[in-house]
Length: 329
Ligand code: SAM
Ligand code: SF4
Image (tube, rainbow, N blue to C red; front, side, top):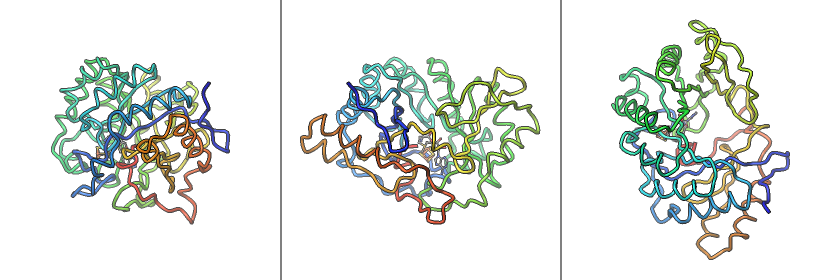
């Protein structure tokens, strides 16, 4: 018997995002400052066994059907292969959100461990723009990582892209063309107020409508017939299909009413929303000998308090204290 992770608005979380580390080897300007952040101390980070125990409770007792490991950069996590293998053994779909650095070496081993697919971040196909956005000259390594993931069968590979005004906002069509050529599914995401520096500015954000217009200058986009369900991307067939492109209007057309996600941070806090200002501590329960049933009950309670929406447009909106890299995007 499972207890659903339901909230007061009738939504049920079945999609678990687990952050395996808050560290990263890139410094995307919309995510973190050039000097990095004060990383979580090792003893505050969940161990591999603790991560797997929470995933197991989620799957076996709380109706979780899909587990996505993220970060920070999850490929930096030493125990990743073991965590993936043990999660896969629970019979749920297992995926990874990654910047693809180092994937060249690990893609096959991840596939062998049971990883089903990856989502990767790539905001440009110009090496110089890549270096400007990520503050690292690693474009070729990312491309090699994506190729290795494709060769290892970790598809369909979804690419997430963020457009920044004055930096890459004129590059949407060329990024789409490149993804079509390489067989990757591209999705643009509106920049959200989740940067560690708190530099986000709504007026400067490149909107979903602008992205659509820019792509429409070179491609014919028609709404895709597939029902959207809880998937956040508005999908469009490109030039009649079958290729598609997604646009995720997280800010201008929020999809909170259909949200089916729940997040666990690398230090074992349940977050019922990316923008939540409250977290529920499962690490203390894990480390004080609580039973699986008690941990499951705390998790259920944590979900009940989920807000109806992220409220970015409310006058009272406050950005969460944790940035995206520490929540697990
Ligand atoms: N390091 C991995 C990566 O980049 O894919 C996983 C973690 S990263 C925080 C997850 C996703 O969040 C990436 O696709 C990234 O582009 C996105 N992201 C980070 N900060 C963002 C922001 N302020 N607004 C929108 N998306 C953001
Ligand atoms: Fe690292 Fe991902 Fe943040 Fe870029 S978006 S700095 S790759 S965590």
